[in-house]
Length: 465
Image 1: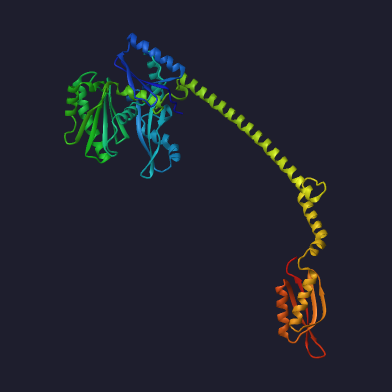
Image 2 (image 1 turned 60 degrees about the horizontal axis):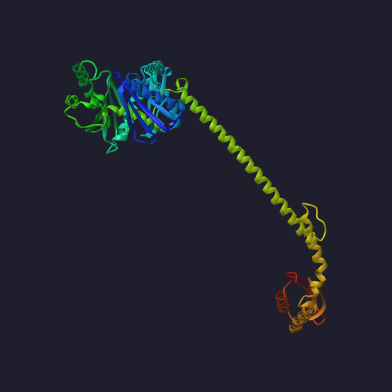
């Protein structure tokens, strides 16, 4: 878990001097101290920083020794970050000069590239990390974060000098007091880092220049070949970059057949300290001090955060339970009120006490019973009445020349036996009855003594009137 702090301090200690930078979260790092490591001012400022660290409001970051830190670009042959995470240790183990089990390791954010997954990894021996922590405490400070120098330098390079093109080859040369680091990439993408265990600020300058001339040409050639570029931006930083004459000599030793554009960072001596401060404040850096090696202030901070998280979960659970209880009571009250309204309405229809759950059945029975009881009244109130319907049937029969010998009529049914002049008359009479909303069927019933066809017609009313 990457912590973020109100303030981040970055400390670069080498050759008996310390450079201290401070940065607020998402702010711009500023140099607050650049003095001899054994000075009273250094002791006073570091004591103040240690107090802020103990309170959990500030982080103090330093770099693991660059010569003891391995930074590698790993590639897994499948486009799945989840699967790639399982094989990073195996891939890194092949790249390291020491067993991965004996190292403190960091794996950067994976990204998909050309059908595979790529990530930056950094590692340092646990024994070297322990020795570095002891050396820091002996020097009067105890960093909460132990970052990787190459990655810190590259992130600051991107922050202070964003690339003009995403595909432009770039490199940063860090001239430190006891070593030189060459960090290279393309655009904002980190690709590789190289460490020279020599410095123009330590020992014989001519001996360093010989090492520089031998190492820098293949590094530049390899970088341009890997990126497919013909030109490159080369930036300079570090305490060794403050001497223009020195930089001029080092530039002359670079390959003349490559197009190199040179730039010097502002305040080059504090470049690394500013990088460490910014990364510590934003929680964006590497921290090899994890697990058993974690700083006591960080462990206390994580414990407080865990307690706060547990407390928040408990409080949220109580709120949810209270809301559920309130909602449950509200639902019960609504159901009870609806039940009372339903019972009252059912009793008003049925006219008697109704057991709970029997409302629908009792109302249906009451309506059916009331329908039967009121049928005579509804028939009496029929605007047509049975007399009118009988008269209409007789009128239609007379108009068609039909002699009725038997007629039965009720509100729901009709039956007729009659003699007709011909078969077509039967069909015409059936159509007239259907127009009066009867559904009828007819069948022949022989002939009269005079030879006229007889028929029997039966029917039901189309709908209840």
